[in-house]
Length: 292
Image 1 (cartoon, one colour):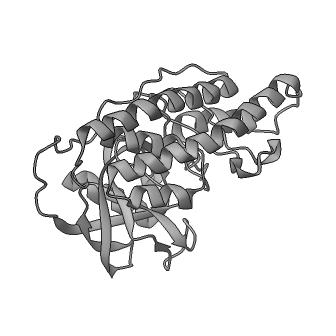
Image 2 (cartoon, one colour; image 1 turned 30 degrees about the horizontal axis):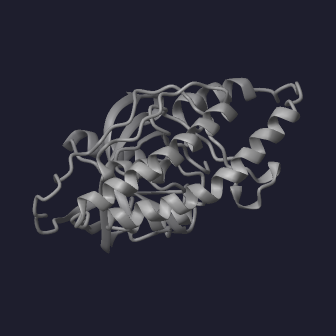
């Protein structure tokens, strides 16, 4: 249950092949695009509206090997007893849970797992009950939070958290210039990803700079540790600037990988037994899908 899947734009699923940093076909991180209901956005303060004081609360936590950004869709198959209980309680109370990238430990069966301090709440948008108390759930990232202290670890992590707000945008003209610049680069990046995957998707960057920064952070095919750093930033202009730097570095490598793909068609190798069924399941439910 590694490398879970979150969407690119109107797409529900992507799986990471590897890090693009090496620039080799064996170490390429590109998107496999699936069908979905589109990108969702959490409501945000408008420009020029003073930010309210930070809120705090108590939150159930689901540490995962992924970074969930506000607005992104995360599909999960919940089968561990502790997380079946957690989801049941969230559904009963109409409450979200927190998704945080694992810093140390394992996703499954590790009571001592340690997450990073900053994560995102996941609102359950749709649920399919299964046998033995399992669930398929579709969730949407909503609010960033910082873990202040872990209250308990059994049967699952519960923490006191502070909900994080974005810094006010000081110069509208500067952020608009940055959005215009990154829009063209991001459009080419996604066009190459879509061409590599062979699937169609509508590509458009939101006008709101906060939403745009979270969407780009989710779409970038970089290491989870880098995504975590982007999530932790509270300055939208800084987040967009870092993302633009990433995109400019990734584009030449992506062009080269796509050219190699064009020159070297994939072999018609037979799938291993059961692989076709599994691939179909992952198309809709992501890599957080177990046959248990």
